[in-house]
Image (cartoon, rainbow, N blue to C red; front, side, top):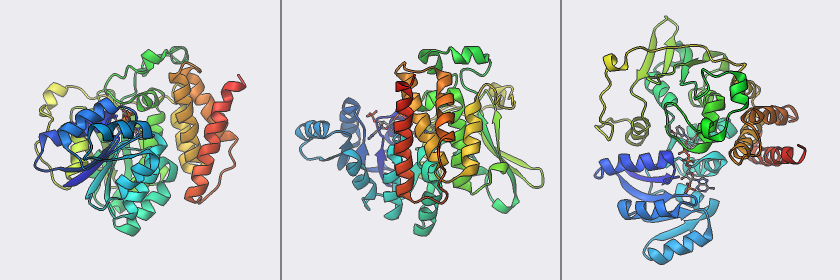
Length: 380
Ligand SMILES: NC(=O)c1ccc[n+]([C@@H]2O[C@H](COP(=O)([O-])OP(=O)(O)OC[C@H]3O[C@@H](n4cnc5c(N)ncnc54)[C@H](OP(=O)(O)O)[C@@H]3O)[C@@H](O)[C@H]2O)c1
């Protein structure tokens, strides 16, 4: 399988490299792309021997070209699009974070290349456009998110589905009070009880905005109305998600929490192989499985995402942009965790929604929402 990884230096990207190292005969690496972490890229170039590499800045591209003269080195957003459009690829993994994933994903689809999609922001921003283009080009969008990977495996006949059940670990503040959440430090918020992920998604997991983004992602991936998507808190993260059918049967996908498994599944789909994960699932070791409703008072970002998704148009992209900028502001110590919600809500309420938007309109509203979010600091 000829593949490329966009975001190979991140949490998902590095785990994908581990999966690939375990199956060297199966994969042939065309390109790898990172942002600023060129030390990690140097290591990966030596391990994977790709034909092309892409980095964020021209300066780092020149550095790598000097060190690896035979390598084709690209840079910037244009470089990512070139990598994603390369028809040598049979599949690409899009595991860059944030809005950077959207254009390369569309470029791959237009070139009829299947996409293993970790970057949920792509579908939150422009799910209607992306899924319509994928259908038009006969391209598979294989979800890397463990919840959507689970639903993908449990879903057979869509007409017979009663609802999709997306599980959530509940994050680090599940048992905390609203006051604890309002006063949470960056360090406490980054301490996720189950998953080791990049910083942005870890903060989103603490506010449950991540689950909200996943609800919108599920709506687009599985063409399911929001009324048929339920979020259930499941602290053990063993049941990765489930599908309930009209006859009352529920089919769930289970396993110990590990991103290696869903990453590998999207890279080898429709086949399954023994991989890097060595722990066999054991019901007895897993012990009890608990489920509870999400607390929307403590985690109002989840409510915001349902609202944005139901309204559609440019609102989900605006919510995503405001949230992303607010998360960076929190990580930089400029605002509190709770203000991520307050600012995102404000930016959403000020937005004049555009229904059935073009890609250009989405990107324009994304830009405006980001500027407005950053301006909130000036007004403080
Ligand atoms: N982590 C998980 O378990 C998980 C699970 C499900 C879904 N996801 C989704 O997968 C995506 C990645 O998550 P992550 O946790 O792996 O994030 P991460 O650790 O922060 O990694 C992000 C990757 O994107 C690269 N990147 C960021 N901005 C870039 C830019 N402008 N140009 C080129 N590359 C850029 C980074 O490069 P440098 O580090 O080199 O700067 C890094 O390789 C997110 O959309 C997330 O929601 C993650």
